[in-house]
Length: 235
Image 1 (cartoon, helix red, strand yellow):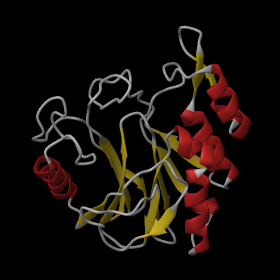
Image 2 (cartoon, rainbow, N blue to C red; image 1 turned 90 degrees about the horizontal axis):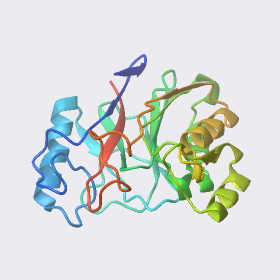
Image 3 (cartoon, helix red, strand yellow; image 1 turned 120 degrees about the vertical axis):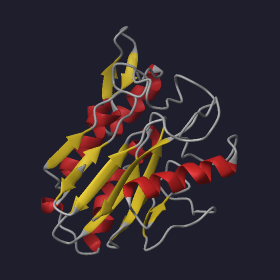
């Protein structure tokens, strides 16, 4: 899918790979638990399907750390939750199984970025940190377009009341209530608010809830399980 002129995005699902249950079948996540060779084959298959020269996978640790990249990290990536590039054909991946991906592009500066914004990352402001890092390299938030990927929705993401209070104190828009009337967090609303506060006006959504969508992996719905990816690259 084209997010902006010359910018492509994709969200994988759990089908079309070679991993066996409970990781079946297109697990792109960390190689702990699943067969590492199956994960490598799944990742290579996605790269071939997208027609990119490589994919950057991070070792996601729920931080607000961001780095510029020009090539894939390989099997031992550094601990990061945001990456950005100006390299054509290099896809950036944010893995998830309830945590939304944040995919950002400035089509004029020819710069794209990806972040993993779960609950701790949203609280820490990883989306804001990604926009700031890209702006420091010449991108303009006013020209940027963002896509927030699938994640656990505010109707399903139940949390203790104390946790809701703490996160909402940092990101008020995350305050939510489940469909069964218990405390919850709406990460999607919080991420959008952070992106808009950083200057991005064009914020789009893949609004699928991972807990409700059987075609996606969900850590809350099934453990152990795999990871899907939100990807962005320059054509």
